[in-house]
Length: 236
Image (cartoon, rainbow, N blue to C red):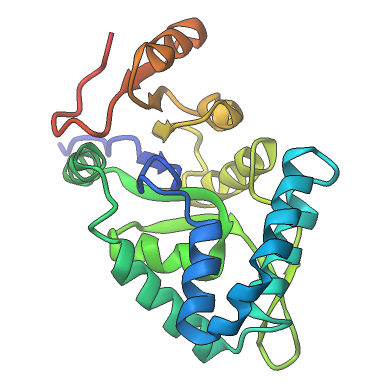
């Protein structure tokens, strides 16, 4: 008599300020502009104006991101160019910007048989390279439109993968990859916007340093951890 197969296991990780210390979107735009077309850095005042408008809630991420990409990278990105930029950016950030606790947690979850899913609002074309560099199994991220030649365009293809939209995309992935609904799910994020994704998980981990994160986690019934610590233990 053979043992019944165990339930599938999935570990869901946010990217910015969770798997990597530094938020990637603006950093990627500045890095790519400096690498490819340094003259675009003269457009930094326009980028700053876009960021201020977003901070003042004059428009949302769905408008801000395409405008910022167009400004700093141009009206389209050829597939080979996108792939080369993404690979070089991932090589620059991984492992130098990965907190020790994040690296330990990813290794632990992989060793325990969890499938690793990165769920991020970052653009898919470079976030995928980061996920691959870290050994993730899959990713859900903000998609961008393609033209008939396959070039990446600044415009989003669907909604920005953030908050409730991220949870919806994760739910779609789970329905396709763990369809019996019995998966044990761990989720890690630094931000309250991922509460809808945490609601899908049996273990929800709020990542950050200090009493603020401990109090927030306790308030919502989550666990708290500091990824700057090598040991992945719950902080109380």
